[in-house]
Length: 307
Image (cartoon, rainbow, N blue to C red):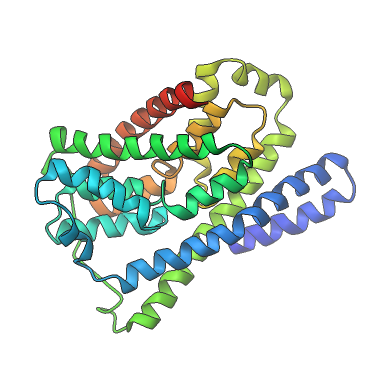
């Protein structure tokens, strides 16, 4: 990944000097990365701190014992405790191993990277003068998290889950300080790579795709929502940076861009792989497919209401 990013950067720098379209491509790409990087840095610092410094049983003790009540509380906890997508998957597995109802753990898994303060602040910066976009993202994402928790409570089956044996930094002989460093280093390098790839893809999308193709999707309310939701799954941009990518897709409606920001932190290619590795493929495919459907529906309804 780093070698590919360096090669792509060098190639674009050379190409930009020879062609106006390449110059526009580089401008869009660099602007997205520069705007998003501070929020990515802050998000990974807070995520690593929570993963390594917050006591393992703190969240479990704070949740109600009744699963139906624990689900919305877990959704609200995700809104207060920042966490990246990559960190939320192992955290959810750890909560289940400590006796938290799977429905509540999965609600936290979806809400933590989608509606935490860092993400909402980044959204406000990416969409200046559009507080309704921040509110729409908060409400739609929180609704998806809680609905999916209740759906699992109603329809989920324990045989779909496969939890690996717990393995922590302490088990590897690391203290809290070293565990924090390793967690931050891993999350920042991992999410930063996806940010660069997402910025490259968004810039390419803006410059290379013919306007007639964009107009064909953008002209249809439903096609535009489905198109950007699918794009979010493929691009796998980190939640601290996806608002800046969405803001750059100016040819699409606010509802379609909302769908990009709601679907991305909950369902993308890297999350499906992480969930399959943590909980098993039987869970990952079912849960991801259901989450995508609920996220698109929630985005469309919230966009129609607020945007």
